[in-house]
Image (spheres, helix red, strand yellow):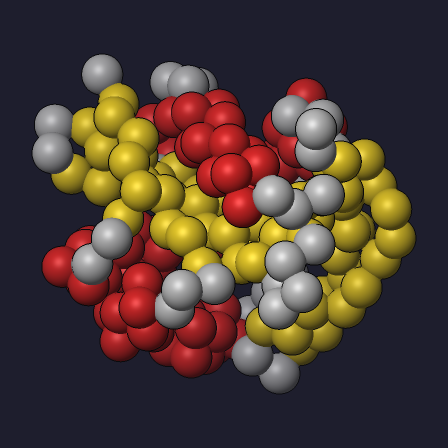
Length: 166
């Protein structure tokens, strides 16, 4: 059984980085060079970066665990004005796809955003990642635009998806 909790300290930074290193490449199109993926992971998903994220009062990191080990996580970032939150990351290890862990993470992330009093949550998803797009649509998100997202030296094309809250 998966448990979903709000991470509160840097003790989980190493484990979060290990999960991120396994899950981030799965969200990238197959054409994304391995060097660009590795560069992104080094710059944004290292244990040091997760320690910084965990210390940031505008961020919330939610973890899903199975048998005491982190199997997935979500990261919310509240904007400075407090009106919106970005669902910056939501990933689950492939062996735990289909277990309900992603839905539990999403539910907790949306509840956290509501507790902050934000009006909407937005996210970016690669235009080639149809599995994630279906999950977000089932979670009440709608495509509201596009953006480019840099992974290493490469620019990827994302959809922006938005969900209004309460």
